[in-house]
Amino acid sequence: MPTRGTRRCPGRFPGPACWPRTRSWCWGLITIVLGSSLVMGLTTPLSVGDTAEVAPILKSGLAYPPAELVLGGLALALYGLRPRLFGAAWAGYAALTFIAFLGPGLKLRQGVLDLSPTTHVGNPPAGAIQSDALAVMAVVAVALLTQGSWPSVGAESPSADSPPAQPVAGK
Figure (tube, rainbow, N blue to C red):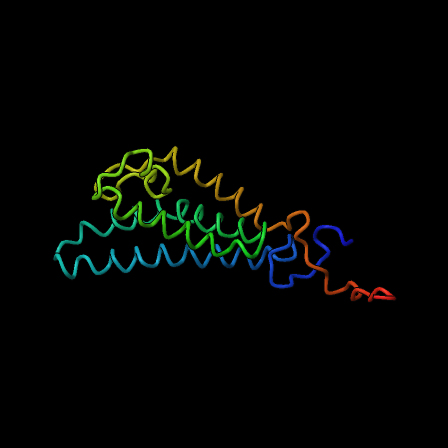
């Protein structure tokens, strides 16, 4: 059995050999969140006619990547445990997005609202950003991304270097 870090990346995220893929995935998510904040920040003055909102919008965009990376890390961790659980990650993302967007309007209890990581960011740019919660979410995101980057016990796929399994005689 190969040791960690010696296997090739066969489509899963089995450790250090695949960390560049995980890092590029994370940077892609961060780029989307920050890019959308930049577009919103630059188009707001065009529609409102006030350039004072550009900096608060960009600052609020910087507050959301830890929450988004928690959701992405959850998906990667589920995929790392069992690739067939990746559909559950989509279901979880849909449920948490529903809670984040429609929960306050539906007057859901605070305990339900707290299930969504974006609830803990605060209310930027209208309100304060909760920096303690962002730090905790960053640690949780790193833990989930790290767990999803390593193969789980019993779920390892054979290495590209390992010989194919030999048929059993008499069966």
